Image (cartoon, rainbow, N blue to C red; front, side):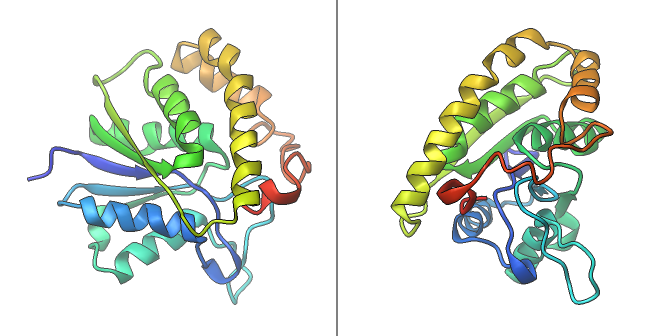
Length: 214
């Protein structure tokens, strides 16, 4: 019997036709290796840095739905897979996974699988958001990084630098916001991916080689 309630897989890219980049597939492959009956929760609608791919009918292909399909095609039962289609960044991955899935189902023991290049920021953000008060349960978070040996080194280096910058930039915010109420207020009034203006979409903040890793 599993000692986990769920395995969480943050978003990290989806391509035309719902194709998943190699580093995303490796996250899912690792989840399948570990899987022992707990829920597998695929996170993310997509990213603000590039438009979503669309299906043959013109509907957007959410990354988490593409990930769920990948898992089901390889034998994970559909009833043990959950998706989250509201988030567009790591902060959203953490918040929406908590309020949509972890809190309602009283999931406490969680493993988060992410790319090595993303892991430090994933851990900082998830520990921050799952630590916001009040907490319906005492969460036990674990983290595991997965590498992609085939990833282009120049792309990897660009993404590592981007992750370092974003981790440093969020330090003050993580120290200042300590409650769910204050976080909710900030997310939906100040974060440009989630407030009413939605200015964060297509703003061109990520360009060049780093964009290839989203």
